[in-house]
Amino acid sequence: MDSVANIILYFVVAIIIVAFSVMTVTSRKILRAATYLLFVLLGVGIFYFQLGYQFLGAVQIAVYAGGIMVLFVFSILLTRHPDEKVALLTSHRREIGITVAVVSLVLLIFAVCTMPLIDGMSLTQCVNSGADITMHKIGELFTGSSKFQYLLPFEAISILLLACIIGGVTVARKR
Image 1 (tube, rainbow, N blue to C red):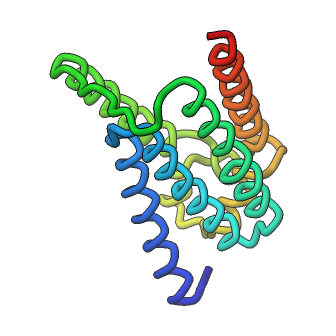
Image 2 (cartoon, rainbow, N blue to C red):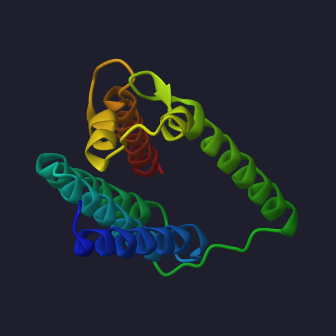
């Protein structure tokens, strides 16, 4: 990821992912929100390809953007009418949601800055010591299975999401 074109592509895809993520959670039409989520998942696949993880990028697109989104759409169509608008949240619920989101963001930033990253050092320690942090190293950390690497939690969350989708389909079928 050394060339200027890769850096530009990274920021363009990052902006697209953030924009579609916001559109996903703010859309009142549920099928449209699922479509926005599809673009977010495709953007994450592009990031994997940029890091040089072609297999992981292909799996992201095939499994998540393909298979999981099909399950989402089936679940939506089984439980709601696709053109039905969801009611707006009351201001009380919106304030609670914004508060929880801000607290979660602060906790996420704290976790990213303090969790062991490279050789047991946190991100803050790596930056202060002048350690060389490359995208390749970060990609290895998130997709590795050794100590201080995060492939197992990533896969555990994907299995949890799949179980939730299967449960949703099962509940929808019993209606």
